[in-house]
Structures are given as structure tokens and as C-alpha cells.
Image (cartoon, helix red, strand yellow):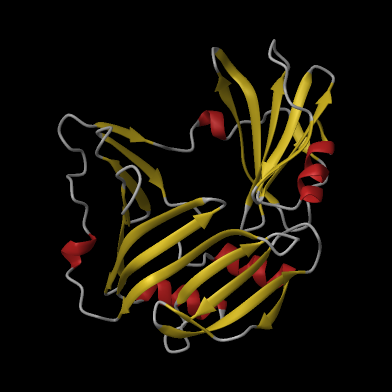
Length: 291
């Protein structure tokens, strides 16, 4: 099921409208995906909110912000965009979740089959996917909290699969570096691959470190250490900040499906934050120690 959905997202030609819901936020985007002889290119254009165009091709992602006259270029990360599933996501789902077939439902006019992935522990959220029986393409994806609440959801509202698509439809509207625009090349630089001197002793099973580095905090260079963990589906960030003049929140907090847990440790505030159950972020925050 997972391999077929991932293969369909990479190899099929399709175009449609994707609706994204997160809490009270609802956004829609137009997607065009073309694969010609293994050469894959994808274009995603915001239909509401600030103007943005995202081009994924040749191992990189280019984000165009015409209002700000800005282009951001970054490597394509392990987590692919909907409706794709990366190898890490497939492995995580197969290992840490129990799969159950759900009720059929119509998505974007297609009779879809639903699949529910229930976590085998209380340290990650559940997921529900709707796929096209004919092609295997992922039509709808929903993340569910431990209470069964919808944390976030992606779904096609209209979709055309396999129709002839002119490759130019997936090309950027602007040049690679438009005149009078800023171009920012985002790379995994030194600050994002350094040993911070801190370690998380008890990450939940399946969560592995994918990034460690330091960031500036206001006018204080390198004042914030950050370690990011992922189980292939979601990421949890751990921040270690030296206590300054401002009083920082300590304890539990929740906004939608994002849980936060902060504690004081000597002269530092340690915070774990991410789309994971409260116990998972608490486990991370309370197990941070000096290396």
C-alpha cells in the first residue's frame, strides 16, 4: 500500500487543488506534477493568502515570493510534499503502527479506500489515509491526536490523473534568479551540523536525530541550541536556551496538535516542541543533559 502510493506520487502525471487544514487555518494550492521518462517536476501555487510558488525539481526546492521579491533555494528534504510518501515515512508507518482498513469514501469525486494507522504506543499520533484503488495515489491524509482530534489534514478537492500535461505547466513563472529579486541559498551550514554539547537521553522509540546546531537569538549570537528528532513522519525540536532577562514559560502547553514542555535546568530553559503527544515531548525535555 505505502510503496504503491509513493510510486504513484512520483511517476504519475496529475494536476489538482489541494486543501490544507491545520487548526483554524485553511489554505488551498494548485499542484501540477509531471514525470517524463523519470524526469520529475512539480509546481505548487498558493491560491489564497500571501503569493507563493514552489518548484520541486532536480533534488532542490525553489520558493518564489513575488510580493517580497525573494527566492529561497533549499535541498529537497527527507519529507516529501503531499501526496508523496518518503522511504522514511513508509518504514516508520510499517514499524510503529497497526494498519486497519476503514470505510470507503469519496474524495475529489473518486471512490477512495481509507486506511487507519494506529500507533502501537502512546508516543506518536495516528494517521488516516485515503487512496485511489485504481492508481494507488494518496488522495487525502489526516493526522489524529491521542484524543482522536484532527491535527492536520491534506486533501484533493479536485484531481485529474493521467491526463496529458504540457511540461511548461510545471515550470516556474519567473526566471531562476529574477532581476531585482533577492536569492537566498539555504544549505546545511556549519551552525546546523555542530555538536551543541547537549544530548537527549530518552527520545521515544523510532525518533532519531536529524539535525543539531545553534541559532542566533535576538542580538545574542549562537545563544540557542536546537536538536531535531523525527520518526519519519513528524519532527520534534528540542531547544536549550541560556536564561536571559525575559521570563520564559515553564510547564506544559498545547496549541492544536502541537505540544510543548519546558523545564528549568540550572541556568537554562529546555523546551521540547512538536506534533507529538504530550508524553513524548515531556520525555524529551526531561532527559536533556550535558554531553
